[in-house]
Amino acid sequence: MSGVAAVGTRRALALIAVGCALCLVATFTAAQNQPKDEIFGGYSWLAPNGYGDFGYKINDIVKGFDASNTYYFPSYHNLGFVLDGSGHFNGGVTPHPPTASNDGTGVGFALAGLQYKYHTAPVSPFVRILLGAADISPTCCGGERTAFAGGGGGGFDLSVGSRFAIRLVQFDYIYSSYDQKAPSAYGTTWNNIRLAAGLVVNLGSYYSPPLSCTASASPGEVWSGDPVKVTTTGANFNPKHTVTYGWTANGGKLSGANTQTATVDTTGMSPGSYSATSTITDPKMKKMNAATCTANFTIKQPQPPQVSCTASPSTIAIGEPATITMTATDPQGWPMTYSWSSTGGQLSGSGTSAALTATNADAGNTITVTGTATTTRSGLSASCTAQVTVPPVKKCVVIEDWGECTFEKNPKKPWRVDNDCKDTLDKLALRLQQMPNGKLDIVGYTNEKESVSEQTLGAQRSVNVKYYLTTDGPNKVDAGRVQPRAGGTKGQATHFYFVPEGELCGGQLEEGTVVDESQVQGQSRSAPAPKKKGKKAAAPPAQ
Image (cartoon, rainbow, N blue to C red; front, side, top):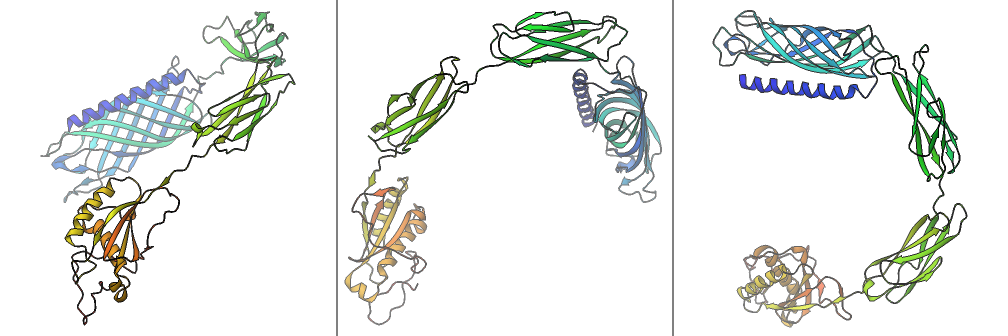
């Protein structure tokens, strides 16, 4: 238990150190409203996470208060000395002691330490480190103890004016211990978690408004060669002190750089955005005695052409042409030149129109044609694209004959998949699995004698073969790739046709008609034969 407590303490202190570092960085990036002293009071909840005598677990204590006073140092307005006191009472233990009240546990802390708070609006985060003493009095059974307490935490305050704030949450980890007098299987360490919320009252303030300035450029947009006047004005400077001025610019030539108003000569400057930076300094101030601000101005530049492209038609076959037309305008009305390029095909033409002819290599591709218009005076250009699709050359597929199975050897079950057919189907299943696409047509036939007595026998044979391929057989195939079909009168057999994926070559048709498998259902090769009725030819299983 002591090892766990040590690890928890180290982690808590590490989090506090990281929070302090982040707040120190933030201090230099934002203005702060910094009180001299703050008083906090509010509700507190405590999870002791410890044990008393006889191994009694100390329950969470929901009744409590916390109060603190933080004095912030004059030279470090975010760092302060904090005094913190809290009391938690009417707590209990588990299990409930049979001879004692279960609402008599009390825990109090008297702590002092350092608090760092980043004062900002509306929410101010803070972290702190605390050391002091804990007064612990469990319901059972060893009496009151006073022990060392130490830890830290942090929280967030929500400002509701310069004088008041609401402490949204305060989280503290406090290490302490209870010296057990009675036998216990647990350690003496208490890893206390304390949560609090309440009201903060701010007393006094270190805050003084920072020095600032504003700068402006007139006019804000000019052509290269026109002068720009920049002027700066300070704020929050002591009117009794004489200030100095300084200007710098990231382009052009400055005159009057040490005066409140300066002039920028823009001769030779390229189009774009520029700035002139003013620094106002109060030499009589020792710290933070300067303010810097920037005036922005723009050297206007010509706009590029505006272009759009269209293709007519947008889909062409090999050897066919398409006309690409460019519509281009220059905002300044200056002359333009034109050029064309493409990702395929044969391109010809000039000016605002070009012709594209598709070649064999373009089949199945989309050709992108790019037109570019360039303004001769400014050198600015703009491009547009049009796309032309060349459909692929369609290839047809041929149905493959994969053999057959006969059903002549078993007159009692003329629909059954026998051993010879089983061997054929096992090989056929492996072959189908090796084909990534396509389907297998199973066409079932009857002979003339069977067709008279049983019209659905051919359909039954085809669905029984499918049942074996997808269910009974060792090399099961996807049922979605197998289609049973009835082929009429051609003999006691099923024939297998592999239909590749794609469009069938001209003149090819799939043989037979699709079997309705909700009416003719597949049977296992081990299904029993139906009972004989007279001397009629055997019929398939009842559907």
